[in-house]
Amino acid sequence: MSGEIEKLDKFLKKKKVDKKIKELAKKYEGKKVLAYGAGQMADFIVNSYDISPLNVIGFSDSKYGNEKKEFNGYQTFSPAEIQDLNPDVIVLFVMEPKFVLEFFDFYYPELANIEKVSLAERTFWDKLLGN
Image 1: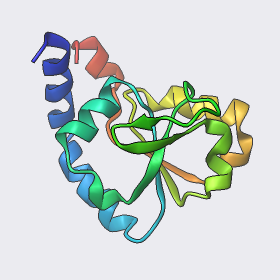
Image 2: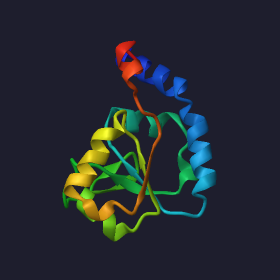
Image 3: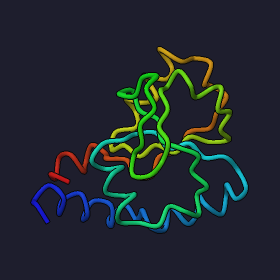
Image 4: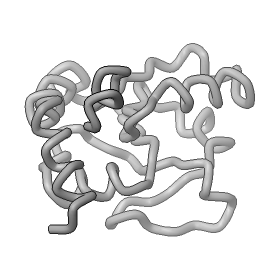
């Protein structure tokens, strides 16, 4: 494992992502879950944790346009497609969800009624301590 991946692994364990996935799976059982984020953290989570109980219908990220791609076996969607997917919840697979939420508020206000939850948020203290 590279140094960055080891740090990410440690961070996700500290944030108890495995427990959070189970809690979200129970809370949103039978619901359509859209994952947002297709970066290093999302890639690591998909490949290191069992997210199958979440009923993920796909991944969205601002880097995806209209071209259809796959992200670790999941279909991808642009943020502009989210409303048409009608997910019950958007789970944020990003370290700093505040920026994603601001992005949604500014560019996609129509998504305001869709619940958004974060898997693991990096806090001020995490940053200060180098996590």
